Image 1 (tube, rainbow, N blue to C red):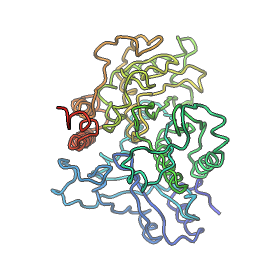
Image 2: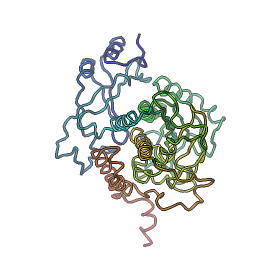
Image 3: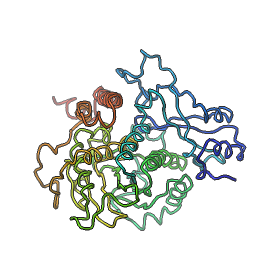
Image 4: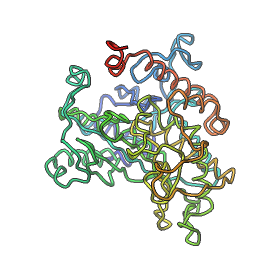
Length: 456
């Protein structure tokens, strides 16, 4: 019997579906917000689509995470009548679905004009740029997430207030908590092994019910697939256990935000590290210095690609383990970029600005694309931050946008971003982020009511 991890071609996909006697197959793709949009299709349609693709309503590129239609996009909208856009099936993405018997999941990506906007297509273009420069890219994603003893019904009934975390209090790296909830940890680890997104490390973080999962490193496109699938199916697993997980950047003002850090390394075509040079300070090769310099230089312009929601900016405040400026340091967790020295195998940079709410494809495209731009332009790296970055007065040019609206405007105006990601993507994405903040501004917060209702 063929195993999902051995599926590579359309013929392999037909074989495994036939062997499992499936009448239907689950297919899906990730939208601009990193939400999995999918459906079951019949075996016959699946076999046909392996050769010629199939149509997927392009509204998934034209609405937000709440299924509300974004009002001023040029690619799609009422003015185009929301036609189908063509997608291709990706046989090598075949995954087990642990909760659905013999059922299989295959990912898709948009083709044609929609490929300019497709998040997975965006990352493939950035990786093609890296390939043309002579580099292979490895990446690993790590996510923090809070777990609650709640259900989708209970959180709505409570108005998202007074929620019950899985465990109380501060208790990072807790041996006690992981043993008390050993069955839950085993389920997480087992599901991720079965779905080919293995976890390298899993532990409690500081806060009530918060965990961190570090996914094993792999090629960058596969790393993004794993990150997107992990966020989706971790939530599935929790809800099937009458629990809930959130990847919001900042769900409470009382606890640190939730990160979505990205680790990146480059190797040359001969397999040797492009980042490591034992003769240079911190083992950083010239290529790595240019790469980190590019990330630092473009971070203010591309921030909306990694801090993608209004809530993302609640996390970027001093003293809560999230960076507030485009800074870098060596083994420094108060900076936005953490260079991790080591051997040729382990030398890498950690892009710490990202939050758990980011779309893995878009966030990785931003972190990688900026680094490649730094190599292409041979940018020189500023001096590293030594000590507590929060306590240092940084140059204004290292400041980051304070709101999603400001960040979207900077992306739209960025010539490097347009060169790296394409005009169509930048316009579409910036418009979608402006829409997100305009939707936020329609609402009156509890803080405003408590502050102004009676007194003002």
